[in-house]
Length: 178
Image (cartoon, rainbow, N blue to C red; front, side, top):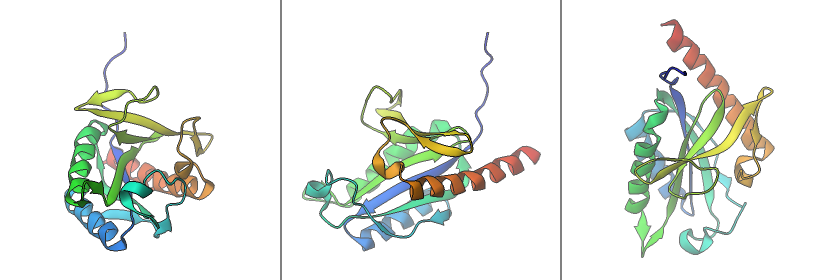
């Protein structure tokens, strides 16, 4: 028989993209007020992997990745995703999202994103939110899976997530020693 255990806290991350740098920065400010100070904010980079969002959010989309200093319990992901959905609604215009927020977390083993979209590799959590297993950590690096979105699996993004994971591992070790 397995014994239930309390999971380690995880590192909250988020992708934020928009056609407006102003909305992008306002969104990061809102997320920081809700989840605490970021300990990493990427440079602004073009979001060029797909044109899926162009009709709704406009052209020339730009993105930033952020991670937050405060560690959270992984079971908070549905609440976090529901909150980010409300933030997206704040910036809607004529029924279109002007910002897209994809929250998730990094653990020692993987990177999980929260989503409202069901699929074979996305187990249901609660409240209409699913866990998207996006990357796994093996042999000292994050690795893509057959369903990983291309923008989460390019080498620069993987290196960024590896660096965030290193920071996270130090934080977890410190919390264990306390």
